[in-house]
Length: 149
Image (cartoon, rainbow, N blue to C red; front, side, top):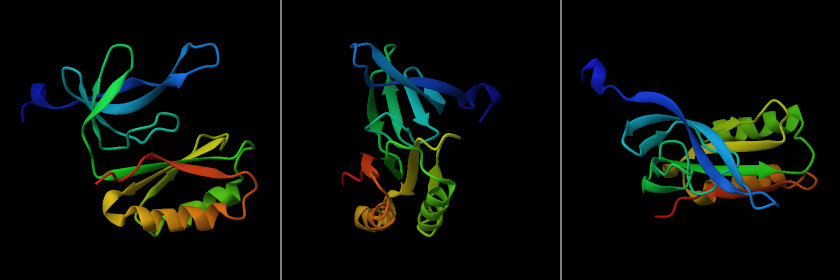
């Protein structure tokens, strides 16, 4: 691979949805440019649904996207209204690391993003997430991009 052929690391703006006033809400995520409108997602999203780290996305100028190729990861997002405590984040991190996954959260811990390899399987991830969330007031989690195969 020559220097000019190497992928370029960039940040892409994905449409996460619309605000209450109808204006678009965007999330900026790390990616590798694969040329043209194709990007390999470098991290799982905290707001955007339908993709996970490692997916190859076709991204339009307005932030709309489609998955051109699924990567090897699944993404889970968690929220509870109040910020998660550092102890709750640590508990989830321990459980997810046992599955070979990654837990991320902003400094405010307002939400949590979990990335786990698809080979682990949805049922195993569901069990871990359900066990963790069971004793947490108002905690909810959902698949941002489940294993669809």
